[in-house]
Image 1: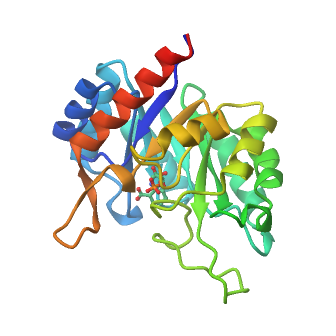
Image 2: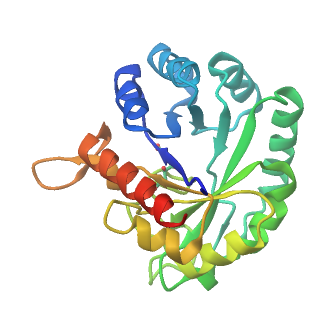
Length: 257
Ligand SMILES: O=C(O)c1ccccc1NCC(=O)[C@H](O)[C@H](O)COP(=O)(O)O
């Protein structure tokens, strides 16, 4: 039976990680948001618990200064370090890509046992062809162990490349699906496993899996709790939605037998 990896972000406490482990989530992702506060004992406990349970811990640093990054990886020792800079947008490939590739090479040399995940920006449907997502992925393939598709929001009126994303300079946590035609092409072309992310929730994940045939699926916004106005709350999971997702994926796997 083909297993589909289920990855859930943003898990910042061992208590929440414990619930996800019990629910059967495979990869549990945490975020280090600020370079000045890179040492977070609660996140460290979270990573340690995930690793002890035999699940996979994934860590996003929202900074890429080499010294702080090395200190961060050394401190948390996650199974996967996950990079989310915007490596391509409507204006083309980000000129910083060569620096980011070099950074990934240095991380690989410094921490050979830690896997590297790289987010590939894909525009929302039907704008996938407006971003050179596949070309960007080709550049990063030799220095990455996994890709994760993620949605880069393109606004109609803005032709400058300065699109506003939820975290400036990074791709992700939009709650919007990416163009699955482009995601399917990436899965087809990639030599490394691809996780489908961007706006995944219990209502669309099976459709997404059927359409793109990914190695795994990822959710953040679509499995978050909602506030009283129906807006997703960051860093708070809705365990009902997480459990629903796990059940849907595991049943789908069985149907493939
Ligand atoms: O979680 C963050 O703080 C974060 C910030 C910037 C880029 C990515 C980030 N999170 C993790 C992921 O990679 C998400 O799981 C991914 O963006 C999923 O998107 P969505 O389900 O639409 O929130």
